[in-house]
Figure 1 (cartoon, rainbow, N blue to C red):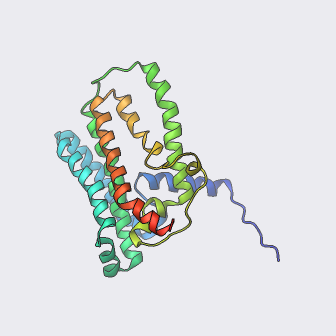
Figure 2 (cartoon, one colour):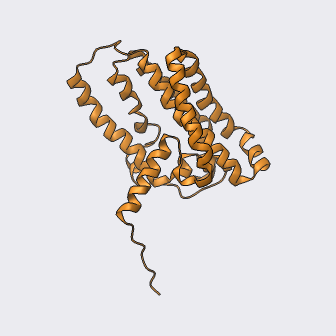
Figure 3 (cartoon, helix red, strand yellow):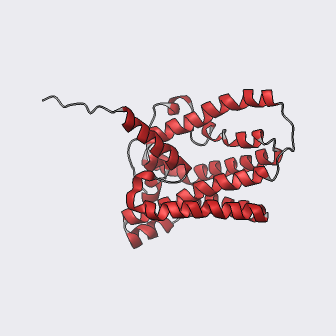
Length: 234
């Protein structure tokens, strides 16, 4: 008995590309009913970030973001909070709630970094020619690697579904960028975050992005890697 291979058309790939790209920004378009909560919160977050920017409250905002994202996510995934949510709401609903919270973390991280850089622009001079020579290849390699990794693993893994449910979800990926880079998500995949600071000529921005980079590596070391070793590599 010969099984038919399902052909994947251009529009299927295009929609998948859009889903992954928008999902990386903080909204999962493939979540149906959850979008009625997700999209208004995304719009509200953006408007709130603009209001905070005009008021000049960026210091409080970036501190809140850093604690909300790195400390908050470590507490949800590294303590019994996720288990409590699952017992309270069930796996499906609990993960849906967490996805929205994590999406807000993704979005506000971008807003906060942008605000910090905007308030500290033109503090260092780099020749525009040198800037573009550096920025273009870094962006292509960095964002391309992160997008490729997210495409291969799927948005469920990108949103830490396995970590949240504390069990294996899918397969351990060793292909694509994972064959080239040890950590395409947090290593080379995070480098494009420095480009905004370079483009705005912000020395302080580079330092802040480095602090955020250290935050995600700390989360990876303390929470994610122990889970990966005992769940996928044991």
